[in-house]
Structures are given as structure tokens and as C-alpha cells.
Image (cartoon, rainbow, N blue to C red; front, side, top):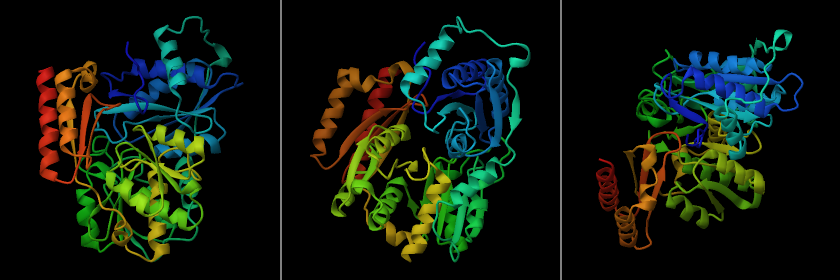
Length: 448
């Protein structure tokens, strides 16, 4: 068996790749690994709105109970709520059942430790080893020692109170549109912004189990871009299925991605004297335009591998204040231990109000270099083809040389899907489009 955990937990097609049997095993192994030494371990379990959530939740909980731990059901709440509530409720661990921005047929399982942090590779490997060893040597409780289930009735309310309290002041006078992706933010987002005094309009907030991320949310913000203009909103904010991402839309209906949000927030924190070492943390996928703008504006940039877990590692190691990804995962260290879409949205809206500027004015500090991203569906065993196939490697070098130092090629296997992502940046959109598709076509020909 290959490595079970990807960049963000265990993910696959629900009831086919991510089966109830596997969910049971993950619940059992996760409880054993994460609650060593706890007298009566307590594990929080949450989910997003997709139809397979009930199926996998039941199996996960059975696994947790089978080793004598208590499962506390949070219901449908955002992923960052689990990271916060595991600390607030003094739990030993937390589990989120979600496939984030992926389509409804996918689901996933990600763990948080008692500090609200995603697991290290070593702990994930320990969980996998238990499962692969068929739990050899593990005794199971009986009678009164079997675990039990309880429900946290105020999970959403408690998370909203936390999110609202991250802002000094309020959002009165702002007209804000929210796109909840028919996902986990469908209750919490509107409640938070209403408590802060904004005039709130909400779209895609009626989940039915199958419409999560369907032509909406941060992966499909087109509806929000139109809606903001039609309603005359100051800004729009789009979340993904589990609300650990947030993208924005300015008053003109133009998309403002995570790179802009990180730069805007970083500059504001610097102005307030709250940006440690004048440094923002981003990943290799961030646009070169951000790097250039940061340098001009007196900010330093620390660059990590893709994944908010790696951004967080750098933030914690160096005590940095903020970091994130172009996709909208943004981590404010003073507030939460993972990407938090609702907190990011609140902070960005707060900057708009406090600065007295439009979002388009704030975003003008950066110019995106033309960029193209091409996804190639590829079997997992071929995901490293760009590192081992000589012809593919030669073509990549040829394209890099043609950019003459004014662009770059980045090829990255997806950690959650059977894809290789081919990203190019450069000064000429047509040139990089052609080059990206040339690389993609060559890779496709190798696996046909």
C-alpha cells in the first residue's frame, strides 16, 4: 500500500475509495495514536454538507468508540471551527469529514491534535501502520469501558463568537455579499457578519447534500462576481465547501485571490506594528507579482511547499504573523491554527472599513503576472513523470529557457486528486498558454 495520507488528510471517492470500513479503521487508529495516556479520551467529530458525511461519520464514530474514547459530534461546522473548538472544549483530538473544494462524490478525513494542529507525517504514518498491521496487539474494551457519543449543541454559536471577537470594532456601513458554496459555512458566515453589523446578502447557502461546491463558492465565484455588482456591494466573499478558504470580489466584480488578501493584510499588520519581521509566508504557487510587490513595499517573503500545513509549520517555527496560499487558505497566527475562511473574510472586510478605501484600491498594490494552470488527469503511479521521463524533463527545461528569467514553470502532483498541475507564469499570456498545453500534451501521450 502507498501512503494513505495526502497533503490534507485521507481523501477519495466516498463509499468506493474512502469506504466505511476505512473510516472505521481511521477512527480506531486515530483515537489510539492521538489519545495516548488520556484517561477517557474525547474526540470531536465534524462534517461538511455532502451526502456521504453521515455514512462516514457513523463509521468513524464506531471506530472511536471501539477503543473506549468519547466522540463529541459537532454536526456541520467549518474545518477551522474544529481547530478552534478542540482547544476550547479541552478535547484530545478532532476530526473533520470533508473533501474541501472537491466535488460531491469525494470526501475526506483529516485529524487535528489537541492543540488544533494538523498531524505531522510521523503521526500519520503511525496511524497507517496500525491499520496495515490489522491492529495487532491492540486490546479492545468491553462492558462499561466502551466509548459513548455526546453532541455539542452550541458548536456553531461558539465558533461564531470566536470569529466575531477577532475583529476590533464592527463592520457597520458595509454592504457585503457571501457565497457559502452550499457548504459548511452556510450558517456560521451570515451569522458572524450580521453580528458585526454589516448589511449581508447570502447566496448558495441552501445545501441539499449534493450541491456543495457546484458552480459556486471559491472555486466558481462567477455568480458572486455578478451579484456584487447587481446589489452594489462593497465586496463579496466566497468560501469553499469546508470554509477553510476565502476568496474576495471587489466592488467592480473583479476577483481578489489569496495572494492579494495576504499582501493587503500583511501590509495592514505592518502598519499596525504587528507583522513579525515584516514577513509574509506564501507557497511556491503564489504569483511572481506578489514577490515583486512585496519587495517594493518593504515586505519579506518566506516561501514553502504547497499546503497550508507547511505554511503553518513556517509560521510556528519563526513566529510569523500571517501566511497562506493563492487558493485562499490564509492563516492569521494570532487567531487560529489553520486556514480560516470566515476569520479571513472578517479581517479583510475590517481593513476595508478601517482604511476607508475600496477593495479595488487596496488590491492595486499588486499586479498579477499572466499565469496559466493546466490540470492533467494521471494515474497516481505516474505523478512523478516530470521528474523521471527524459523527454518531459527536456521540454520543461526548453520552456524555462524561453522565458529568459521573466517567468517560471512549476509542475506539482496533486496531494488529493489523481492530477498533475502544470503552472506557468510569464509576460505573454499566449506564449505561456501554448507552452503549458505543449507540456500537458506530452505528458498525456506518455500515459495513453
